[in-house]
Image: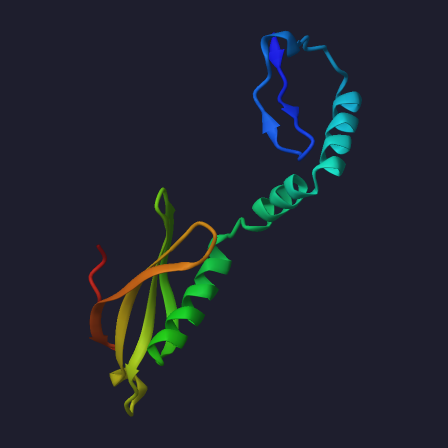
Length: 142
């Protein structure tokens, strides 16, 4: 048998007592959807949490653009390109190449690769410069 939390006059949930157990009934999908709608209308905080959780999903393209902007703003350097984006259990890992020194011709510009880690929600957690190189210098793939 399922148990349901009861609410006090102040609206706080408390654990159900043994006499407050309820029987779980089979519901049609339409009835279940209506019940969820009613529950959400009575708990605006829960509805807001669900909407904000859905809105926080960030894709690789958005995180790449955010990484270019954040690193450029923090370092004061112009972003050249994003060379890697990876998502794993500890967040987004992005490598952005920034122009550290402009030269003529442009092929002799000095660039630096910066590795940044973003939380799953898109906030910057850390960054560091991993490599400096000339634009015309060949990089070995790792």
